[in-house]
Image (cartoon, rainbow, N blue to C red; front, side, top):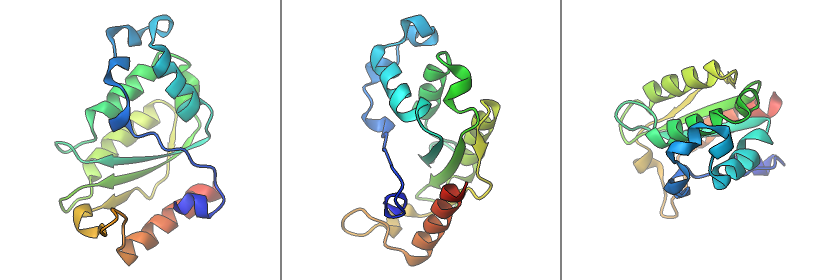
Length: 156
């Protein structure tokens, strides 16, 4: 929403809603990738210049489905996936650290693939306490930090 308010075109890919049947053994060969996975890659990865990853904490890292998605698309158009793209990271957790370790792990994967991670990774701690009745963040300091990060991504 903050990016849209600044006039940026935004798409949302929620990996929790992606059909898990796209992640087949065949995804590790570009010629046999599921067409649905190729379509997601084209729309949400290859055709964009900037990305924002919002990653919840799972076992001290980022969710396995994020790694599975990145691995799945990496066999097709490898250099164009994350290479040269500017990427903002937001970690969320119900605990105190805001998924700092998970953002570090994801940052290592992204930079290995040639992406540029913004230096101000944003940890959002106790996220469950920051949400209002509509599921929106209502905490003023967190909104301020999100606006700052959005501004940095736009400025690049």
